[in-house]
Image (tube, rainbow, N blue to C red; front, side, top):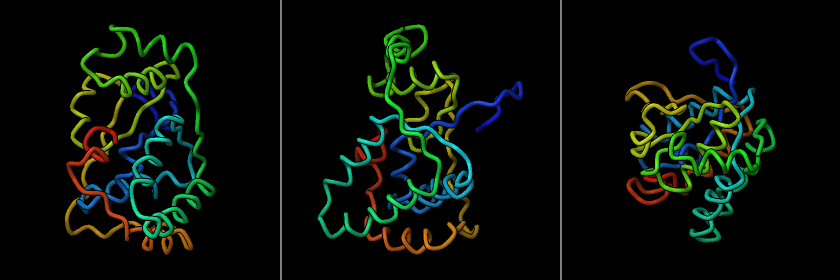
Length: 181
């Protein structure tokens, strides 16, 4: 959980861009995304079922061999970290369709996600160039990792699985990391 400016606790939401960012070909993005998960490993985060599916959709586009190296890490992370995977409810959808709560220029998938975040009084954490479109919304961009800083590590065996999963690296500027996948 995060605290907003008033000190009120809010649920931390994550999107596919942040999750897949851990496998970005850009190391500043990759390590920043990884650092988020290392810091939140003992906490609680929320991820919409649609965002989980977007991650799978990207990974399923790669060879079986790369998937076999990627999924043990992802499976273990989803087991040891409290990631609540939640579907949209009627109020989430209502806010997504509202022009006053979610700007019309956003992609519909982002409006749906933000409808869920706003309805549940959460804070969305994301990474990548699309974050500029979220100005004024309850969204925090994970900033690039400073060059020269040591990379944070997961506890074992998660770190070993992560290192093995890095056989799969997602190109920068592709749909996988540029528009939330």
